[in-house]
Image 1 (cartoon, rainbow, N blue to C red):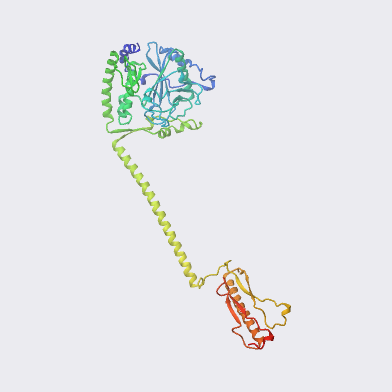
Image 2 (tube, one colour; image 1 turned 180 degrees about the vertical axis):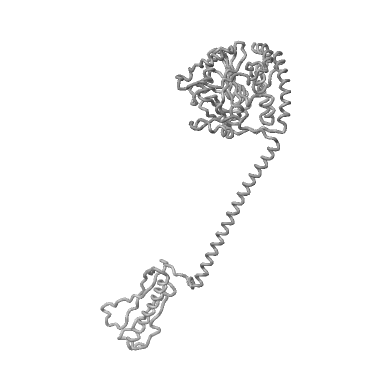
Length: 502
């Protein structure tokens, strides 16, 4: 049984516990020239890599395991040697990962996954839009049990990420080849372990105040099992949580209760010794970080520290840097001071906005007052000059002027001494160029009407031999006309043969 083998080698792992990742050859340099790669999916590992693996008693087609550390921005490839212990053969610098430390919980949150993911041949994507890709398998059983959502979370090339782990194309050619060879050697699933950071006592103490700390403590159990055994742990999910290297006679249900479980004795003993050492280291780290808080940087802050790497490249190339370089450890006093300064800056913004509104209102009120004063001054100046005392007549198309039009007598009335009454004819007023001419013209029309009426009266008086007849001529108002407009109505003269009538 697999766990029996794990227990057998666990004691050997304890003896080698002092051999940490820092003492291993990291193989950080990738010697891939894409111009010489005729087929990215059939690329063969370089002779230098194969030679190094051979010196480590590692066969080309032996199983592999992938391990990611977000904070450092590292992707490690571990490969089984001939004793079935895994050794680190590659350590790549991750070009880009999005979001912050912590698990992915929903579609669109830009978080890269954290957890344990089994990768099969079906997860290999040679036709990716991002050069080459390996699907992480997110969401796994744990993610689904905790209602996490998201799709197409990959390890891919192109150095551009939106929830993925993105590598350079050169790195991806080599990673794809290592996975291909492992599947070719008979490995059914490759375990991907994605952690926020190396789960050492110091890092756990430094991140103790992070809201994801309980989730990370759960992941740390699987991390510890690999550190002790140097073999990928057997992973199951029950009660919506990960369990590692647990033996049970009943199946595991991700959302159901955990069955009765046991840990192999030798493994439990090795873990006990490991955890004792860890507890002492954690106590030391807590004293070191007492009164301090680790300020996790944002993605934008990580990008800022590697902005120069984008120069001369395509816009799609977007390295993000790592959290260790962009983050900051601060004391509680420094945090309080920073908070005070931030609050003061925010208050200054509020005060400036209120002052801007107040000044705008004052400026508007002053402009209105100045305008009113200008209008009043102009009115006073006109009154002083005598202007504007009378209303200025305006053209009204509804009002027509009335003038006298004397009718001509028919030729058969030549013997009549008088004249027939004049009729009024409506004519439209003429719009003058200025108001003074309009007033003068109207006055002249009125005078002319009166003169016409007077002349007619005098004419009557002359023909009858009598003085002016005040009752012979009537002045009538013009219907619908101006009050100043009049129509002079002349009384009809008596025929000469009726001279005996008075």
